[in-house]
Length: 241
Image (cartoon, rainbow, N blue to C red; front, side, top):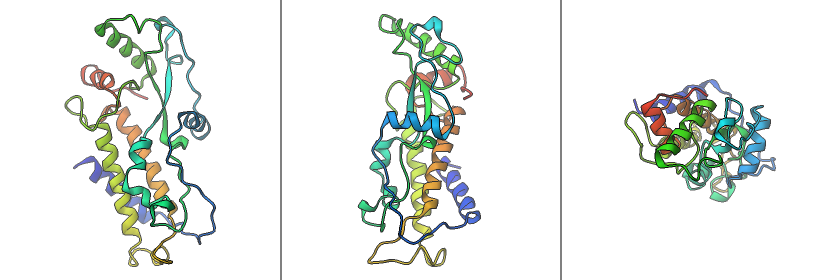
């Protein structure tokens, strides 16, 4: 079964068990789709109660609590802002009466991930040595390296392309958001006012669930956020955090 199909079934089960949180359009929410790494970092600390790792200067200083880190958007903000699913969370897309209370910079969409180029040894290292440095940082952090572009295509066998997996999950959220507005599913949410419908808080919950699933996929080594991370997973094994 494709990951997207499996995730869709999870959403379907969640949908059936979750009370619809429709409320009349009286909110003043603003949907945030513009990525901001500074806000994301602050929100990870707030929403997940996770401290940012200390930053070392040299490879010798790297350990399980000390490694260069960056705040990673699990659902990439550029990919999300260009996806049709935003019609169900942002009023400006033309479908909703007002915004849903979703921010791509919410801490649930974030993960502190290591990188290695900040270390003193990096700039003068050979290609092979750079992979060694990257591997040591990943091993210490227990997390894939957040250094290099995310890809639609997989870097190694037994992995999926990161952006392709994100696309599958966003499609599943979109499909469930659309189907919910069928009068047979929810009479309240299907009521249109001048062709627009109220945003649904459960769509935000589904996007948060997609972020959580992407985090799980990263930890299991099913997707890789960078080529160096992919090579580590393929040659050494999944990382744990």
